Image (cartoon, rainbow, N blue to C red):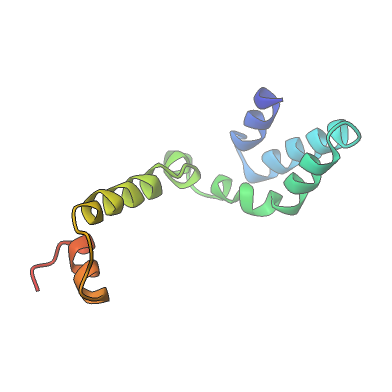
Length: 98
């Protein structure tokens, strides 16, 4: 199943990804109804990265950048027991001197 889903998300074009997804949903609708319903519901959003140039797709598709940002925020705020206000916490997160 993982290989088949990966083929959908790594399609060369949006239209091809949509075609592959529809074939996958038709094939496994009876066996995995809730998974196929979930895929059907979010298909357009899930394939949106295929509308971008191929060189940009991996960065758009993955959440690595977001995970890195959240991890850095957690690392920076962990050393401070309590912030005097929202502005102080934002200064630390954004590392601005004022």
